[in-house]
Image (tube, rainbow, N blue to C red):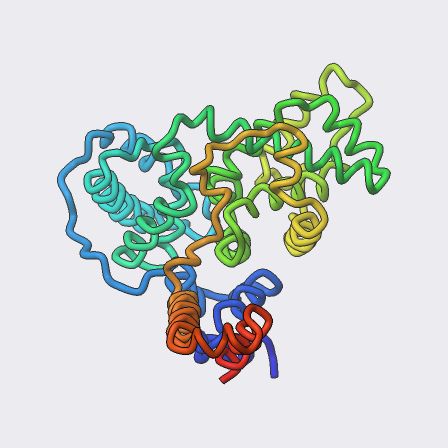
Amino acid sequence: MDNSQNLQTLLVNLEQDVGYEKIRKYGRTYGFHNIYFRKQIWIKLLGIDQQLQYNESQKCLQHDQLLKDVNRSLNTISQIKNFKEIDQLRKCLMEVLDTIFSQHPNYSYYQGYHDVVSILILVLGVEQGYIAATYAAQNFFKDYLDQELATTITPQYLFIRNLLLRYSRDNSNQKLRQIMLIIEHPTCVIPWILTWFSHSLENINDICRIWDFLLCSKQSTILYVCAAFIAIHHDNIDVRNEDDLIGEFQEFFQNLNNKDRIQNLKLEMVLQLARTLETQYKFELICEQEHIQFSQKSIVYQHNFKSQLSYYYSLEQLENSIKNKVSRFMYGNQDIIINLGGIALSFLIQYCIIKK
């Protein structure tokens, strides 16, 4: 059975038992292959289990800034070459963005969010793209839409730097360590974080592969992907002149589409290393030890959409029903429990009830 057949089987059984866990593992390891599967799976991973009504809104307060960015958008996607098609897509993108920011006036648009929405529209279509963009705004990009960008993005690139310093030390990678000791502010990762690489890459298949990975991961996983990208590709940077290193570093990683600099993205190697880094270098521990402070309400502390998935709903209901069942049994038989041995026996009774 090939991977596509495996994925189809997982999709059919998605609502059952550990279906979401299996498909998340698959998405991180292999990706979802093509638009056919992504249309079905992304909306599930985004927790879209009801239809938000999509009605085109009037111009939002941020319309003029949005229009400037939209008119510059979609040029870098290599699969879109027809100017008429680009104009139509931009029109749809503008309508969706106006709708989102009209209905959520508390959101403050940041440059690059239009790239996020454009990928969702290209993969899911206009109406589903709008719904997905709304859910993504609430759960993956909320920090940047309703807080000061400088306060939310600074701890993220500081985390990436400290992660790479630890990784280079533990793996005796002197060149990477030398680079990261000098690069105190790796700001080239900002568009990667804010747009999940949709602003920085030209091949939509590469972008979607990264999104497959991130939609199956924790919110903090984007930081590990950024770190892995630098770790995999830093060898191409010339470190002989330290005075020019900062500029060389920023220019190199800001131009990912420059084939003279990075001819092969080695994307699967990057994602494999990201998985390894997540396992070996825990997010909370690095933040604590390096005194990196995120807002307590930051999305980086959340596990994506866990509360919205039907599988986790059913687990929560099961846990609650078990607790209630145990409580009712113990309350109705408290005299017997006290007489026969108290606490030890009560634990045994709870175990027997749960097993049944």
